[in-house]
Length: 244
Ligand SMILES: Nc1ncnc2c1ncn2[C@@H]1O[C@H](COP(=O)(O)OP(=O)(O)OP(=O)(O)O)[C@@H](O)[C@H]1O
Ligand SMILES: [Mg+2]
Image (cartoon, rainbow, N blue to C red; front, side):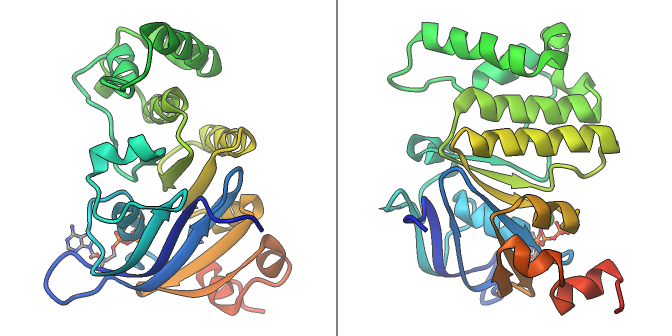
């Protein structure tokens, strides 16, 4: 396995005082590969993503991207190092149009020519055709599935080296959820490293190259899909309600 693109090593973090939500967490994401993270509600999965993206400063441990220390950097500067985040909640500006939300993703990028942005914009609309007829609509007026398309289209606009994706299929119809998982696969095939959290444990296990299990803020198990698929770890079996 080549060196990790994004690595968290021995990170402890929390929201307040001495309550640690993440405890000594280590995890890695590789270029062109999907790292999956599963765990019960409240385990700390979203907190881990927020810590990686700079919303929470780690109390101890290291976070590196391409070998560079990014712990403590502000979230709005993370794209400079190639990190992007599709959060569990919406990241869209509801009163802005679809086109404005898309362009905003690359607003103020240094060293980026307007012609490149326009090329990306056109390419993104080819890839996400549902947004073509909705360019002038307010993002807040889109359906849940269309809003999710816009979130992924934004990621496609910025082409990060690593994308953190938190619960992308929540609340979506099965057909739309299947499409979301196809985009994630396509992102990885294009060389992007992915950290994926989703409550659809079977899907995460099936599509990830490496799976981490989180429980009460700690990584309690990890392995390849082959370690989970045939004979699911006892803990995962319990969550799925499979008792054999
Ligand atoms: N802003 C916050 N301030 C204080 N505590 C928080 C905050 N956000 C989350 N927590 C706490 O941190 C713990 C982990 O929450 P987190 O949202 O990371 O879990 P999760 O694994 O993403 O759960 P879910 O599957 O429900 O999304 C929980 O005990 C939660 O109550
Ligand atoms: Mg969460």
